[in-house]
Image (cartoon, rainbow, N blue to C red):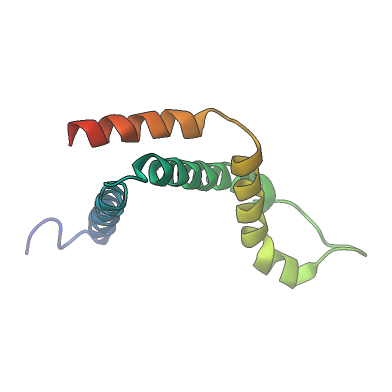
Length: 113
């Protein structure tokens, strides 16, 4: 058995890398055409939203909402979706500068590839 087969953590990392490469390839295929810039801009904004969600998540994890007006278990269950929505709105309405940088790098990658 190989070293990779004996380490489940490494297998998971390899699977994530393959999935990321497949998503990159899908973006490249979608972006090859007249609407190339629009597709790349949308994907860059999606990436920014995911990034912002990952940054916001720790802020809400330890938030204690028990009490008279707390949401209890239900609030804890749906908090992740709320954070995702916050991140999506922030990406759409606020310019953090990530979208333009990501878009520029994807355009460069399209030109090279």
